[in-house]
Structures are given as C-alpha cells and as structure tokens.
Image (cartoon, rainbow, N blue to C red; front, side):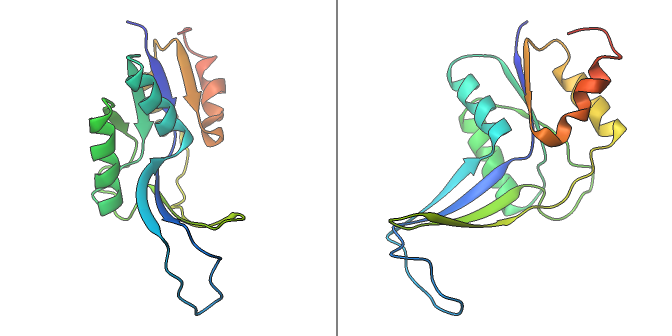
Length: 155
C-alpha cells in the first residue's frame, strides 16, 4: 500500500486576531478574535494529504497535556492517526505552543518548545514507521534520518 510519511513536531497555535498593535511590556490589549489552531509543517502535510484521501502516517510528539489532547482531537477529525515519538511516561508539553498576535501591519510570536534529542533509537522508530512510503516529508532536525536510510534496504 502506498502512503505518505510525515515526521516532525506538532504546533498548537494560539492566535490573537485583530490586535490594534503589539502591547508594551506590562500593558494589556484586547484582541477582536481568538482561535486555537493545529500547526506545524509535518502535521499540516499529513492532515492535508489525509483530507485528499491519501493514506498518511505521521510521527510526532504527543503527551497527556491539554495541548496534546487538542492536537489528538484535530488529527482524529482529519483522519490522521499519529505515531507517538514521545518517550513512555514523558512529562511536560512535547508539542510546540505558539502565541501569535496579529496586528494590521505585522505579527508577533512567542513560542514554547521543549527540546528533544534525535537519538539513533528514535531514528530507528522513524525508519520503521515510514518504511514503504512513496514520499517522506520531515523537519530539518530529522535530516540525519536520510543517512540512516541509505544503510537499509530502499523504500
């Protein structure tokens, strides 16, 4: 069976829409709208492919936190069943969380990103998940994966 494999960190974007300007330090400004959206290149590729009916596999990090729960629900609604790269029993928030303030002239971001080590064991799991894919899309941090694939049988 042909499929697309996508590998990378999931983002949950907190969007403050319609800000008149970026607030000064210590100042509160209210937005006209607020949205919580699923983001990230790898998840976006997987979701869009699944919406087109393309069989898709996504390897990403998910935990037991509120933001991971939101991402899981979004994946489910879009027909994507993620392969979890988070370590068993891992705590904290393994997804990137971004607050974006959109003003008439520009946008400003604040992001939380938990550092994750790309280990040989993790790369082996990524290889196993994506073996047989017709196309593999991944974030730059996983580029070592390409070298590990050359030591194995071709897709």
